[in-house]
Length: 193
Image (cartoon, rainbow, N blue to C red; front, side, top):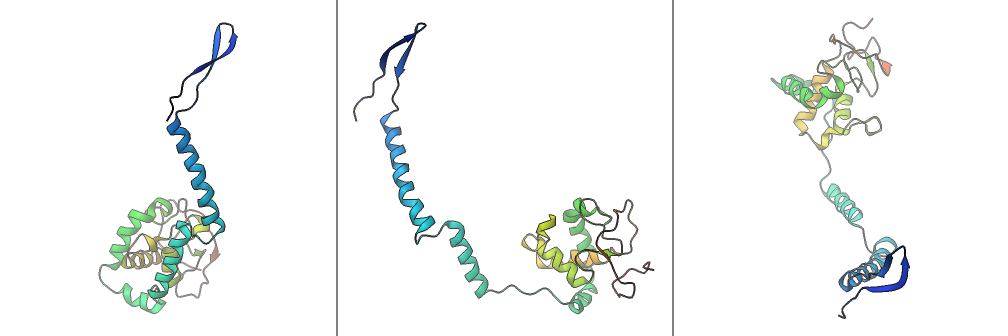
């Protein structure tokens, strides 16, 4: 490579001379290389047969899910039977205190999230619908899909614990949100008129 030298323009303004300071050759060739790389990469991956990494990951995940379909969540009856297992509600209380209390308050009275102790519901009031909301989340309203972060047993335990919060007295309950639970429903609290 030839040596790059600073050259002065024949220009002077208030005693300030202007110099032509060319970039080092290694930098120029690196820049040319990135332009050539982009000229190949963009047409191949964005308009041609190549797959972007996110699309390749998604197709791999779709194929994996076809071979390993997710186990469906238990039915209402299965959850009612699971509820009888010793320690399940204590485990759910522990998970709720760790993961859910920042939005729903420790006693379920609601902070950012809705009040879980009143007789109103936004996404269903059965054990199965609560477990589904905990598992899948409500992205449009900011609720995380805990099924991706917690074990299946923890999701079911916290869903059952949440189901049992209905009818409890919260210290500072948030105003009711959603639809009232029908008074004849087996899932309504004993205090429902």
